[in-house]
Amino acid sequence: MLALGLSACPPAARPPPVVEPGLEVPRLGGGGAEPSTSGVRFGRAAPVVGARWDVSVDARSATADPQGGVQLSQYLSSYTVEILATNGPAPSRVRLAFERNVQRYQGVDKATSIDGKTYVVDAAPPYVRDDAGGAAPEEETQRVLDIFPDLGTRTQIDQVLPDAAMAIGEPRDELAGAILAVIHPRAWTLNAGSAVLERTDTEDAVFSVALDATGTNGLRMVVKGEARVRLRDARLTQIAVEGTYDHASGGVSEPGTFTLRRTVRDR
Image (cartoon, rainbow, N blue to C red; front, side):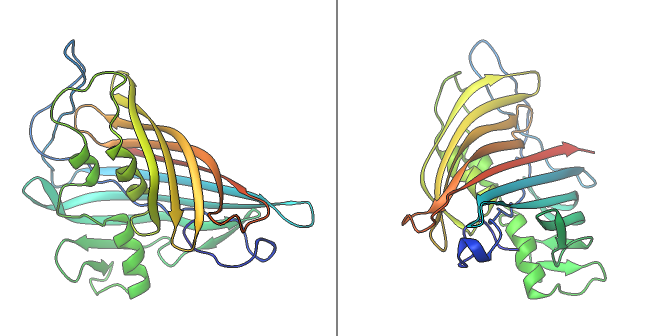
């Protein structure tokens, strides 16, 4: 499946592109935190072998075709992650089991090469093994590594969130770039982005986010929405954005619309 912006076909000959997002591994370390009278602090939690969580992704794009209809495309992915080994403050080996990984065009599903498969991802080579223990094929390996680009190290989300307390209304624009990397670590270059801490609830801090990014073949997306980050361990639990895409040069006669929702839940 092509990430949003990677198809070079004319609009009449291709479905509208969709993003194939990655996975944000939880922030890891020690201690816990929650909002207080002095501001909002994010906690850290050491990785635990055997911990599992589910990720679901629903990315949709639509564009008008020359015949007056609408081309609809959707990327659907659901998978479970299990920590198999740790290295200090981060997981170093995980099992990734895909329940579903499909491209849906005009209501018809097409499975990707990783649909229904299980992999072991390691911080050391060979980085991706299939369920039988052998090295995964190159195309599958790249798809999986797009989901785990930073395995064995602190994630970008972890790195950009401060240890000090944040105030409601405080900007943290570095978070926009980290979220774009979660959507896809290779396909996008950030033109401009913003993130502002809007509020907290019982479990999460909620950031308003805006992303203006250009894909590797010149497609540009401009989206905005919210990102939820769990207070007790700084895990990115949800991205929900929507907006438009078009060629940065104005080459697409009918700009498209795009929405993405990505949710993480503990098992």
